[in-house]
Structures are given as C-alpha cells and as structure tokens.
Length: 143
Image 1: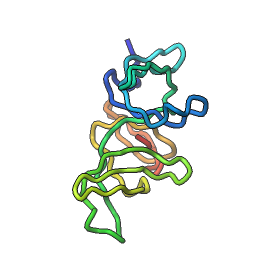
Image 2: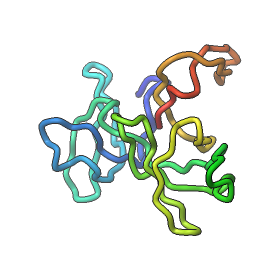
Image 3: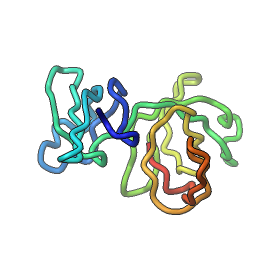
C-alpha cells in the first residue's frame, strides 16, 4: 500500500526536468505505483514506455483558474489546462480553451483546481484534511 502522501494511482502526469533522458520530457502518462523504499513512482507513458521517476520529474496534468491579471482582466476567471512549468521563470505554461490562447502565468495568478496534488516550497497557512494547519507560501506551490 502507498503511504497517505503518495500521489494516487492513475493520476495523469507530464514528465519534466529529466536531464539524461530528455526525450521523455513533455510526454504524458499515468502513475502506476509508488516504491516507498526508492521514493520513486512508476509511470506508464501514453506511448507504452514505463519510467521510474522521482516526484520532481513529473507534474500532475490539471486545470487552473486565471486570477489577478491586471493587463488582461478579461482572462480572469477563465479555466486553463496546465501544459508545463518553467523552472527558470517560475511560471506555469497554460492553454486556455476559449479563446484558445497559450500563456505563461506566475503562480500568484493561478488558482489550482481543488483535487490537484501539489509540491510545496515555502510558507503559507494551509488546513490539512486532518484539521492540522501548516504554513506554506502560496507562490511556492507547484502542481
């Protein structure tokens, strides 16, 4: 059995930040299992290849709601699909469906969907399912 903190089986993911097998970056797949002893996830890619990945080498395919844009306020409230994350700029690469527009958004301009699994970096107060409160910075949350 996977620990409570493991990302769930079947969760759709995108491979990212691989330094040796860079040809797999950007590929889509699903989590098959978590190997607690190695702290790695087995991911079955859509092309049939299986990879053993550390959590920092994939991100959940999820949606965000655009928020707080002052230069393009007409996009606030729109839902976008996360297509990537740029480690250099700290921005999500997202695709709006209507109108079909690709954007690079700061984390502060993204409201992550309710069922998203995230990696936390920093401090902000978050209430966990157990009722416990922890501190996390909102700009340090990555899908």
